[in-house]
Length: 389
Image (cartoon, rainbow, N blue to C red; front, side, top):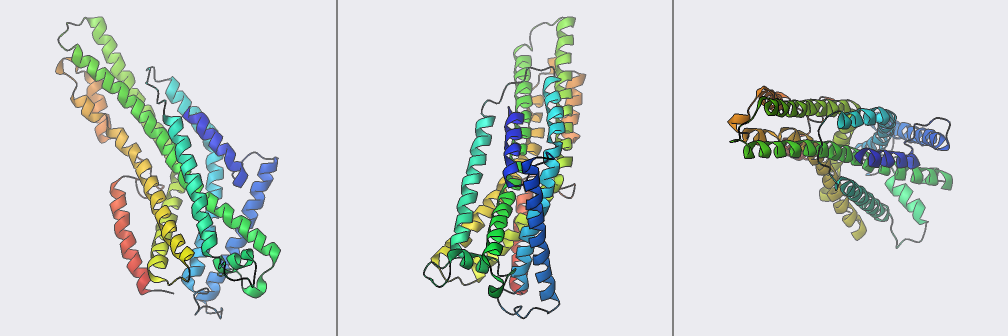
C-alpha cells in the first residue's frame, strides 16, 4: 500500500518538473523548468558577485545588500539542485520499490498490516500542500502595497520580492510572468523535498512498527507457554521463527541503508536550506522594520512554517532510528526457558547495529539533532546581527 501511494505522489510531481520519462510532454516541461531555474540562478549569482566586487551601485541599499542577494541565489540554487535530486530519486524509485517489495514477500512472516498508513500519508501530504500554498500566498500579499494604485500588483510583487535580480527599468511583463512562474515552482520544490523525506521516513518506520509488533506478539506467546513442556519439533519451529525475525531485521536495516544512499543528498540539501532560511527569517522578523501588517504576518507565518517543516523532517526521520531499537525491551521480556541462540544474535544485532537516515553520512537524523540545530541557529543569528551586509 505504501509503495503504490508513494509511486502515485512521485508521478504527480511531473506537473512541477519531476519527470524522468523521456520523449514525453512532461519530460520536455521538466527540461524547460530546469533551463528557467538555471537562467535565474546564474543571474542571481552574478548579482552576488557584483556586490562582492563593489560593481553595483545599490550595494548600500536594502534591496542591493549582500544578505538579500545571497538569499535569492540560495533560494533558486536550492530549487535547481532539488529538481536534479528529485529526478534521480524518481528514476531509482522503481528499483527501490522492487527491493522493498521483495523484503516484504521474503520475510516468511505474517506481519500485521498498518491499515492507517495510507490515511496518514494522504493527511500529511494535504496538510503540507494546503499550508504551503497559504504561506506562499502570504508571501505574495506581503510584497504588495494594496493602497498603491500607480502600478500593477504583479509589477509591485516582482520588483519587491526580486529586487536582488531586476531593477525597475529592467521590468517587462514577459520577464515578470517568467519569474512569477519559476518562483512558484521553486517554492513547490522546496516544500516537496521535505514532504518526500517525511513520507519515506513514515514508510520505513511503519515497516519497523509491523516487525516490532510481530516480535512483541511472539514474546507474549513465549511467556504464556513458558511452563509448558516442549518437544524437539516445537523447539525447532520456535527457533526458526526467531531466525526469520532476525533476518527480517537484517533486510529492514539493508533497506534503510539503500534508501539512505538515494535520499541522503536530498536530506543534506533540506537541512542546510531550512537552517539558512530559519536564520534569515529570524533576522528579518526581529530586526527589519516592515511597513504593513501583511508583511509582519508573513514574516511570522513564514518563520513558523519553516520551523514546523524542519522539525517534522527531523522527527519523522529520527523515528526510523528509534524504531530500529524499539524491539530491545521486548526481547528482555523473553522468558529464560524460550531463550535460544537466534534471540541472542538478534539482541546483539539490534544493540550494536546503528540504523538511521543521514545527510550523505555527514550527520544522522535523530532527536538530539534538534537541540544541536537550535543552538547553532542561535549562534548564527548573532553572527547575522553582527555582520549585516
